[in-house]
Image (tube, rainbow, N blue to C red; front, top):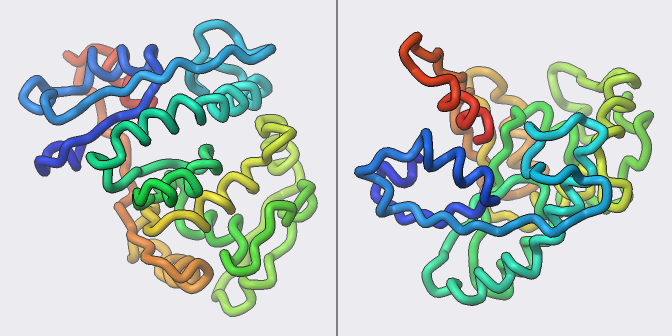
Length: 241
């Protein structure tokens, strides 16, 4: 919404159900002419419940099937970008679409990776871009130790084994979340991180060093408190963003 408020035209790529939720509750009428919603229906995937289009629609053990369906959007997204490449100069995306960087590169479109996780978690999870491989850290135990690129940091971080075992339950067995985010970060031109410099300056600096690209903090993005007179459906829609 910030980009639209600044006068930029935005193509918002989403699924039909999410589109309905957003337009019903979130888009002011005076800005609607700047937003074009691009509905891409998810292809059917075995074991993905009918009507499920976001993690909010699913229990955690069903999330891997949503990621498989999301990967199935590649042909339709490719066609949209090819048809619109002269109008689209930047794409803001998250960790899931690891297959987008090669496509955007061919079309001359620059990429911005938006992380809703803070700088410390991103710096811990993602190895240096120059040496990262898709098979790095292949089991939960690999995340319970401090990584080698962390040696000069003033504090140490690592996951508990049970935390990573729980996360493994929501990952696609074909392409892990870690494979996805490695390729996404390698292919982006700018990283936007949900943090502020006062909160974790060392981690922001490390991210820039690890990946040799601009890393911009966008603030902590705390949720707004709903007023008593506001419809609960508005906040349900906000939780999707």
